[in-house]
Image (cartoon, rainbow, N blue to C red):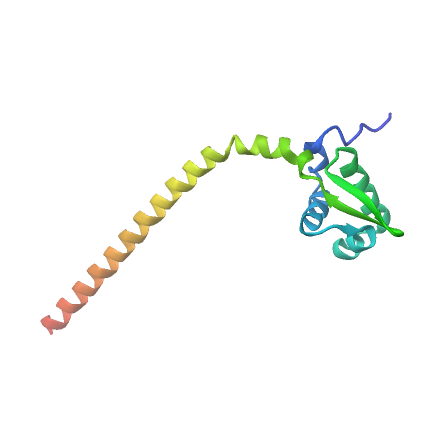
Length: 128
């Protein structure tokens, strides 16, 4: 049975952690295959395969610089991922706000307990 294509869209292309690692490296600066091999520790054929998948969904672009081919991220292809994740941003923000409130309450309670311990400690010294 033939294997299904793994490059239907940007979502499936970035599902692989190695491809995300390559995208992270390319987000900082354009790089050649040999630079990506050195940075990832992957064999050259694997890096080339991952780059091909990323190119097929237009997540990376390539251009020639003399004899070298340099790759860079093409953020437009990743826009659908951003748009999908953005829908969850408000939910996450609300949860983080609630967590901040809980942590603030715990800190106040902890400080109040420390103050009470200090007061009891001072009173204990007067009793002696």
